[in-house]
Amino acid sequence: MKSGWLVWGLLFVTTCGVDVAQTSRAGKTLSPLEQSLISSEKSLIEAQKRDDRALLKRTVTDDFSLVGVDGALLQRQEGVDDLGDSGLIEIMTYNMKVVPVGDDAAIVTYDAVVRKKPEEDQGPPPRYQHFSSVWVKQGDAWKLKFHQATAAHWGDW
Figure 1 (cartoon, rainbow, N blue to C red):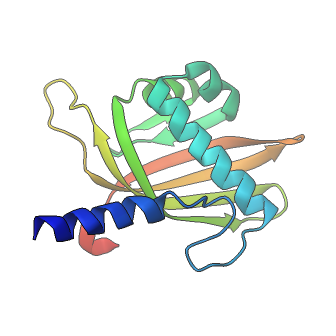
Figure 2 (cartoon, rainbow, N blue to C red):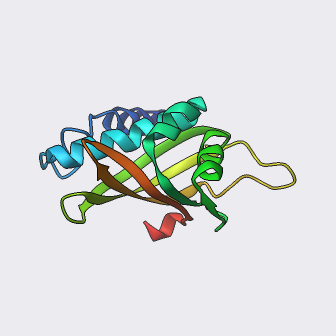
C-alpha cells in the first residue's frame, strides 16, 4: 500500500512540474498575456519565499492593497511587508487562470496548498487557500494592484 502512495506522489509531483506558462491542464496553449501574468505571479511567490522585498516593492503599484487570509486590509508598504515577512515555507499552486479585464488589466486566480510558520500566539494559517490578484499595465510593465487570500476547504475545490 505504501508503494502505491509513493507512485501516486511521484506522479503528482511530476505532473505539477509541467511548465504551466506554456500549456494549461486542458492542453490549451496559453496566450502571451496568460503566460506573462502567470509567470509574474509565480515570480511574486518566489520573491515572497525569499523575503525579496525589493522585488515585491518594484512589482506593486503605488496604490497597492492586500487583503490577508485573516481579512485585514493592508495598504502598499504594509502589504509589501506582510508579503515579505509571511513565513511562507511552501506553496503548491493549482488551477491558475487569467481573466482579462480590458487591454490594461487582468485578474489571476488560483488555489494553493500553503505551509507557513505559525504566527506568535496563533496556530498555523489555513492550509488550503484561494488567491486573487489584480494586475494592471503601467507603461510596458504589469504591476500588482490588489491581492487577496481566502481560506478554502478541500471540498470547495
